[in-house]
Image (cartoon, rainbow, N blue to C red; front, side, top):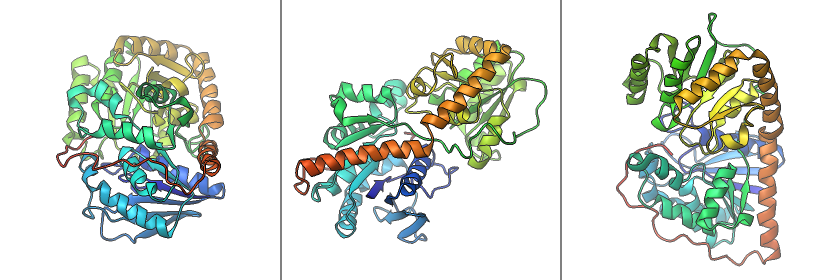
Length: 423
């Protein structure tokens, strides 16, 4: 099968430590490679952000990255990109007329907009993975949400007009159902983890003393709830907390959120037990995870929560907020604990109990590693994604492929005024 993946802002070639690189970059890269390993030909279309890279870059066996010229060949904030999506769509359509894919899989809402515009005239089936929903972000962040004003209506249009939405959690499927998207057009396929690198076996990182060690791993943005973890540390006086994420250590204290978190630690009187590592290279993350007694992730909302699954794959017990993808990945009392977000005292009690019960930690660790291997390996995620592709291509064949369905998303998704921000 010839698969066209569209990831307008998140190139699989991007360094994970880049300012606007993260989980989507890794997801697209790993999924493309895993699908190619199943015998498919995968082309990933992403917007050109510099003048140096060739138009086509081989990424690995069966996978190539196509740099699409749309807007200036320079890095641009996600929230400034929508104005260039009509041009992006036009170039996709031209490319697909020459190299016609069997299926299109769009990642993020702007990719969905462009993919539907490009695929409509060609009669190509389009699947959509949002990675994050604007309605959920707006609900939790309110006036702090920097998304363009037309993000939510564009997402709703994409969800209603694509052939299938590939959601990453049952919580996302529920949200889409409230939009009126029929359940039969939504498949839940989780994100994956590299279970050949994230394993219980292997070296641990960093020297440590006698204190139990907790880890908070992820971007340093307010909605990740790292301040909740710091506040909870006051309830666990015997433990230390390592915080990994944000800018490189030499630039970390130029980030307002890092400074705010340090001030929270000082006000709570736990700053002597909190260590900020800054950005950690992805290849060093497994060893870091293996060096801790528990991983704690407390976001207000979470489309999936890949760092939680990475901890599970390394055989690390997890304590996570009962939101989004965590509800699928963490089985409370079996491979970890779930607590409400923004509840430092309840989090503190849960962590204190977990650290006091060595038998429970060992049982959770074994169950976490097994669940990650069985459900969240990239091979399994690719298999389930392939099933989605086969479903939409078989449906197209039985309903008369070649006659374009009325899936057009008209106009430009947003205006030209935008502010930078997270997903």
